[in-house]
Length: 354
Image (cartoon, rainbow, N blue to C red; front, side):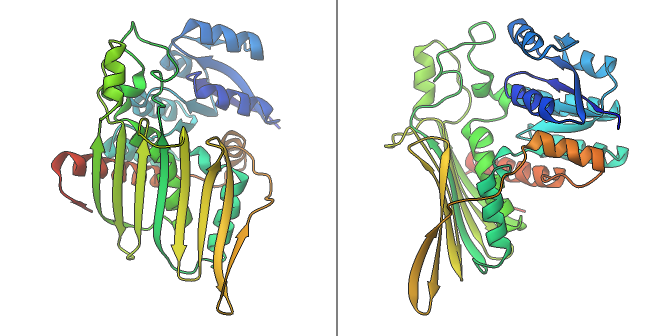
């Protein structure tokens, strides 16, 4: 079988894309691109890559790809994704899908018109525990889910600022430049917890959103480093769905909390409850399930789960076999609609109806 030819644009998060594709027996990574020379040289040497480019658009123009990963600042997602699709590549785009709903919708429509796959890397779906939770929910163990809360809060964890590096001539990280990112922790962290909760809940149709954003801490921290900070450092929202369910969402890069990092997703149903939470303020998790049996209250904990391939392997499988990818672009558009509504509600001080 002829191997699928893959390319990766962006070698920050894109490094994981590259490493993932390199493990797949039916994929050949033919080129990568990044504007930072040191990143290009590092991966060229580490993976013995034949071609590296400074500009992603040059990679798209010069290489005939079956798969293209787009893992660059958010304001480049739309243009590079559409260019890749028009060049004949199936595209896996990093989250968030785009800067706004209009861009995301345009990406979706172009992929459909061209008959190509467009996947979004909502990476928290691609974990053994996530699949175990989804299987439990789909089995009916929770019954009708009427409430959820999904959270990702950091005590002090602003990308770039927290790690002590400056980029782009001392202007700070692109993450807290709204023109490049589109927003702060809501669009960076909250997008993960939002998709995970929506996926578990069956992606119900939203009715209205009420949101708030704040910048109480991170702007001051950036100012001490003579950096311009133009996004929120905390966002919160309530989402009401047309089926009657409610979801609360919280995301922060900087907040006066006990933990350095706190992540959780809770779902309540009329037959049972599900709770995932991180351990030791890190990136390992436990899952607990709560139910009533014979009038008695029982708690249980997940102790093992089946292995799950990562997004990159599964996207390659979907392209090779022409089968559905786990994350559909329509879901990426829904997430963008909700993010836009939260920001608009925060700006206007009023609920946003769908």
